[in-house]
Amino acid sequence: MNPWSAHLERFAGALGLTKDGPGLVRTGLFLTLLYALYALAFPDRDERLLRHLFGWGGTLAFLFLWWRGAQQTNVLEARGAVPWRLLLTFFVLFAALAAAIRPFHSSDLHAYVTVGQIQAAYDLDPYVHTASDVPDWSEDPLLSGTWKDMPCTYGFLFAQLTEGVVRLGAGDLGRSLLLFKLLGILALALCAWLTLDTMRRHDITGRGLALFTLLWSPYVLLHFVSNAHNDVWMALCLLVAFRGALDGRWLTLVPALIMGALFKHLALVLLPFAWVLLVRRHGWRRAALSTLLGCGLAALAALPYAGQWGEVRWEKIGTTLTTPWNSFQAVLTYSYGRLAEA
Image (tube, rainbow, N blue to C red; front, side, top):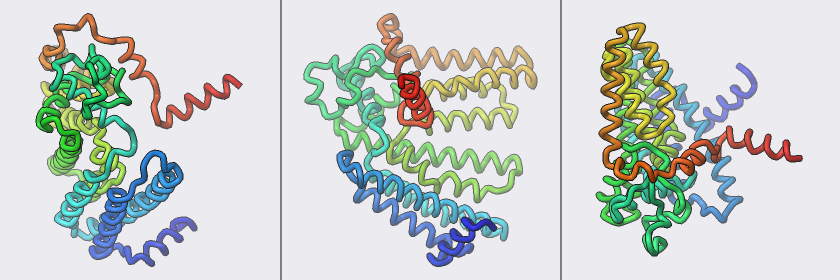
């Protein structure tokens, strides 16, 4: 055991995080306290020092507890005693607290509400119009100033889903934000179920650890519930595609990938690999049929926006999609740019 592991083991032991059922309960309780702290006291943007303390301190604490919980779950699973009810109970608790944490990572969630409100309240195409096209837009609390000049940069299913959510929210910002967070919880639960069912059907071991890794992950919960990022909707479609590939359901493979891209375009990078797989395993004819079905679904999703196709702000959308924001890629890109200018 290296010195770092030895120190972490001693620290975990001092906290009572033993590698057994009671230890896992204590890990869950510590995580609950952290989520509650984030929900009650996460600082505003102008409190920069406190935000950094929450960011770095929270990152280390969440990582430590997640690491220890994975060890505990792995030991229990090796003994044939996976605590399924405990894992699911704490997930429900974590998800509820994560939903109470305000979006702190980015303003994307407010952009989702803006896209929905432009359609629901003003009957405008979000790929053509922006919030600033609405007279007195600043009087509408559901239109975000951060995104007032930005058209929708996501897929057609995403745009339709945002409209439906905002309509259910009945013009209330808080209710709309909460509905997006609840959608994130639902998508996560479906991802977990599909993962476990796939592992069971294909006799893959480690299902308890897989459930823990997904549903107890603080980064999954903070990003896809607290901040309600839409990547999880795409991920669910990718899991459906992966399951179809494993089960030999050739017809569902391309449609599932295209549905993922209709939420977030990144799913399209998997299409060439899907075509190679389909052709090699099922032949050209079935690959073509799967592709035709996927294209048909894409056409149906695009139909509500077809009337103003020539006015879509393609250049603005393209610029936004190719600009790195708040990521490791952005650090490298901007650092290189500054060095090049020096």
